[in-house]
Image (cartoon, rainbow, N blue to C red):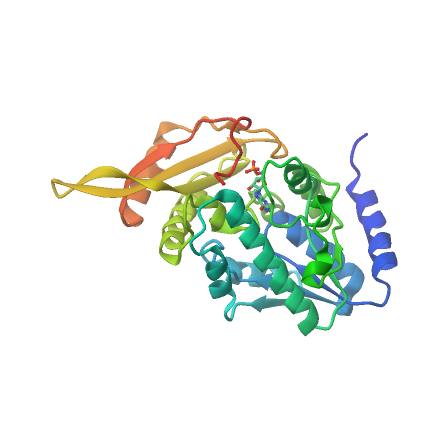
Amino acid sequence: MSFSPNKFITEKTRELKDKIGDHRAIIATSGGVDSVVCAILAKRVLEKNSVVLFLDNGLMREGEAAEVKSFFDKMGTNIEIWDVEIKERFFEALKGKRDPEEKRIAFRDTFYKTLGQAVKSYSVDFLIQGTIATDIIETQKGIKTQHNVLSQIGVNPSTFGLKVIEPLKELYKPQVREVAKKLGLPNKFAERKPFPGPGLATRIIGEVVPERVEKIRKATQIVEDIITGKSVFQVLAVLLSDKATGMVGGKRVLGDIIAIRAVESKDARTANPSKLPWATLFKVRDKILKEVPGVVKVVYDITPKPPSTIEYI
Ligand code: XMP
């Protein structure tokens, strides 16, 4: 049966009213399509009884906090940004961790602890978040722990002092985009390429430390600026943990390796590498070599999902 965004909005509006009544809620947003759609939908229903919150965790893209703020301002929605000591908290939790799942769980727990604290500090009763079906399925199947899934894998949100509502949990990405358009979000936004909640932490193999995050933030900006094709579902740059030999000023140096990945996909459950023109790849390569310090190799990833996943951790 085909999906009706109108029907979805009507049903979720009723459901949110029933569940929340006169209580208050925090609506968490990362600026990505899912959590923004969730925030705009929930804010319409709850109005003054809700606070939209963005955690500036130090793992976001270049200029993301300012962009998210300006987007919500344009939509006429107030947004609170928590940044004081938040970055340090996430870096501290990730310190020394190299295993992908350990990193994901450290991120998730820090995320929910911070939201638990926010719920207290704004004296609200609920957390509303934009978890979608793919997040839940991948976590339940044990493919990877997505940062925004708890109860579906037996972790009680009350551990973090939370009661969680997930209005988008039955939807896949294409349906979220349809709802985004129906809610009046600009096309440019509704079609924005996905970016994972744990942000640049998923783009670093090995330890996540500020200096490595800076490198991958710059590389991410480069690939996103250059690889913009409509058929590309998602594009990413990843900092590998190994070093490779390079030549600088005629001398051997050990430098970083950055992998570029661009995929075509409908809903992120399966994906194929995009057949990008060489000219595009060369442009990306040149800009990365010039602007990201210490990189001596840029490689293009041609693996499909499965057996790979879209992200690297
Ligand atoms: P994978 O890497 O498993 O990812 O093929 C499928 C889609 O989910 C995104 N992703 C995440 N999104 N929290 C999110 O909100 C996460 O922890 C997370 N991990 C992966 C990924 O970018 C892709 O679009």
